Length: 274
Length: 192
Image (cartoon, rainbow over all chains, first blue to last red; front, side, top):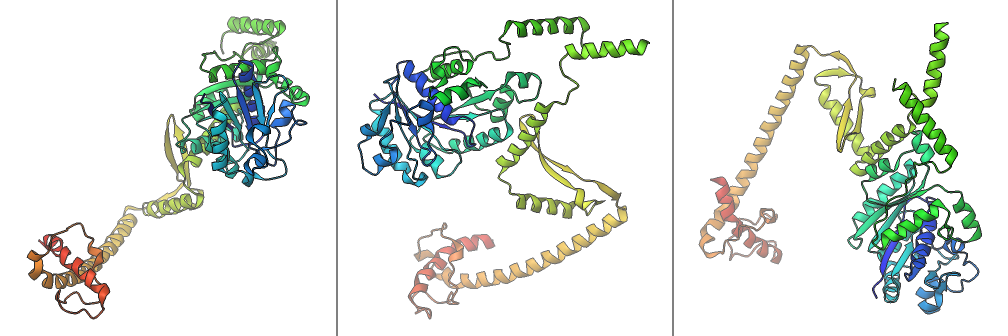
């Protein structure tokens, strides 16, 4: 078996790299793939919290690199899905604790027995980013429809393009708010794709459920009713090569909202455009 | 009375219609972002931009009198391509005679400069022709390698030495002397 190594990166912090890693990883594992999640945000680890595994971590990636344990000993199995394992970052060290060669060695070993190795990249474009990207051949660039996030994503895309090992990179647009887009208060999906000229792999709507699911330590893809969870599951399917249409977020969900929209449309038609 | 009705109509119509009159924040964001990304992608530092700006001011102020402080030099996007936009507030158009005077002064300066350069070049040529004298004799014996760099001419003043004569500057020069010989055919062709 030769697994695919995908880095999840963004440049800017707080746009949802770790949430995306946790959810895509969980969704892939649910679909029957063998997945390893690697947290490379050494010193600021959080992936363990999002998966609810913070109490089970004994060894970290730094322990593996420094020879205190074997790689297999450091892999923490997910509570629900045995297909999913986490290789946690150390909290007490910094980014220099693991170098590019070491992460390549780790990924080479993991590739043999797994379908996917997802690398959660730290924010920024410094050494931590370089290390996280070193072993990957694919990348998912996470951004939100905000100016600062898009600008940073553009920078990241520039850096990824310069890397020969990266064969493809795709854009994941997170925290999309259809209402704000409709009232022209937020850049639309098309605007962002147009500006970055990068292929889309997912559109995730803003969802308060993400906050509660993080608090519970359970990725939102486990909530079948959640729209964000559904969107993340679709991303996982697209990664495995299936063609899944993007969710239509512009359609109002509740019947009352639908009715109001219909009435508005009717009157707008009557009045004509002034 | 009629006004009240038209007002009411406008308000009702405004509620049902798309917010076209409202400030389009999205457009603002898109334009600002495109603009800033263009600058990010050009790799032109603010220092380089400033240099470009001041060079442009020097050039343009020959022809028009302008507000140098208010001159704007920016990147803009036109569809897919990028444009460099220059906005120049003109204070006063210069008289034709003024412009002519500047151009003439410039031409004079240019000619003076050219004359100086020509002089320097002539001097340099003389030196080169001196170098050529001795190698010409050994031309046939040496393999011609035109790709060797002419810059490698020995700087120690021993160029005129014959190949088998001892050079005052020692071993280092012997190697270089060969280069001088090899260069000879190239230089000759240049002279012709």
